[in-house]
Length: 209
Image (cartoon, rainbow, N blue to C red; front, side, top):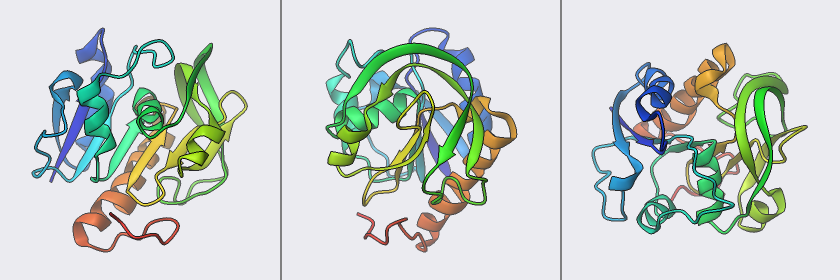
């Protein structure tokens, strides 16, 4: 099995992506690509999952690149968007991303809907935060996304698409120790592998398309 790991970083790209690759390689072969090579016609046939990384990119200031936005908008594979990847999901599906204070700390994330990502986790879990921007809850809910976790500093810590296996988290599970390990384990064991086997059940019983 192969996972496409999209490296969206603009600085220290090799250093920043290491944690993502290490997590993915626990479950799958990892194939890293820079964001600039992606376009709607990019061939994803040989992949079972996608991870979209964080970035220094500020979406409240700069529009996402058109080909990247179209690639993300068209995703049907199981995908986990992390920090910038989470915000990118929001933007390309009609949500709003705003700038706020710089947050560099562990934060208690309150889970409102366990679902696949938070399977077998307690309702309040500490994860590592490293971001300045955040997704506006009302805007993604109007677009149909389900907000599944929040924190004192961020109204949308996690969300998922209403029909596709697309999941976004504002925090950085690749830097969150055992809690991050568990989240990656859940993504593969309760989203990716069931889709590969044809047994995936969407959190809201919707059809997968």
